Image (cartoon, rainbow, N blue to C red; front, side, top):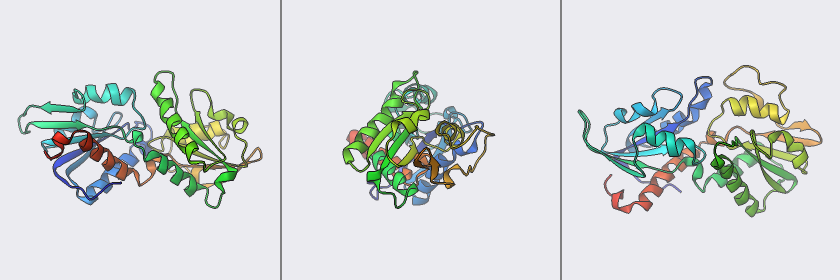
Length: 282
């Protein structure tokens, strides 16, 4: 849990994917940043995105603090956290020292783990599952964690599988399954894979974008077609859906949970714990 720590000489840079199509893609990142700003922990808190402005390449010019924590608001280690972000920000590992530039001091960049790697993701998933299916006995329910899945990056599936394993160990649900949009086991087969009368589905994504609004509802069968890109979809507000003898409860993306702000701060604290020689520099 986050303690009352302060970083008055540091900046926090929060990085998200963003979207040129759906504004809700960046909304959680911006909201979590606003919450952290409200707490007054850092001298500066800024966001940058891969698909929106300000871009990754612009963000370091936006902060003046000599000490900069960089937290990827991504679900898992993978292409963006291991390739794109280090390339765009010029990172050379967990710690990068930058020389002074005109108008800017010498700076130390501290690259933290992605938010989705945090152990508290398990608690957040369980919290969200209880929240969308109040009164449902978890012993009579199947919990389905949905990820994107891709043959291009095995870590995409591993993040979901890790959470499924942890939640199964809790022995709270009749069954816990990981399913994917683009690899087996597929979301489209959820009725074949689940045996409980209640099925709770939580998308393991950072934001409510096209996947949670359009793609997954179609794959689950609760929508007939994807429709137009839109914000504020009502698909989450009609639980439960009666389908094939099941009561289906569908959640918004886990990254929209307000507790994500605390997880972001936890990743900063974990960085300091791993690099104690730098922890007093801020």
